[in-house]
Image (cartoon, rainbow, N blue to C red; front, side):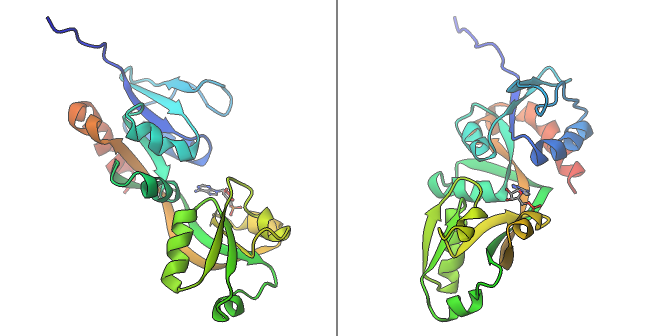
Length: 222
Ligand code: AMP
């Protein structure tokens, strides 16, 4: 006799902040209300009005990992995060929809007054600090610029101010953070938005449950 595991609700991985806030209207379009605000509650598993859908709150850079290993069936992550994840886990995730939320851009920034065009022209070896080493490596390789990449996990804006790097590669939205730290964006690398990602096995085994959500997200994000 076969014993069936109890059905687990569909699990969606999200990060706090802008992605969570901008996902709420998409969930509402799918008829789903969320029971708690992760900014106020310390809960990491959040129930929704749909008994077959729960949310888990994880760090933005961990969303692809939860989805790839199947601990979450789906999730929402920025293109910046997905590029870095794909470098070490190629092809692991299905990315059906650009949700067009949490839009910003990946850019190169330097200290105000640093002559970036001259540094690049002279073939100098730039020191670049970033969390986004894959995207940065590809960008400078395509330009034929030699760079020493320094991996950081946050507060990239500090690096040029204290002599750790000549430039940073970071996501820029309003530009306020750069301005507040006397930095200027000198080059745009790519526009960034958040994408829906789906676990490849869940796509097959839980297709009937996933499809209405994917359809609602697709039409709400157009
Ligand atoms: P801003 O001051 O509006 O240009 O925002 C810049 C800072 O906010 C960056 O250093 C990022 O850490 C963060 N940020 C802004 N928008 C996003 C986004 N869509 N995804 C990830 N981080 C973001």
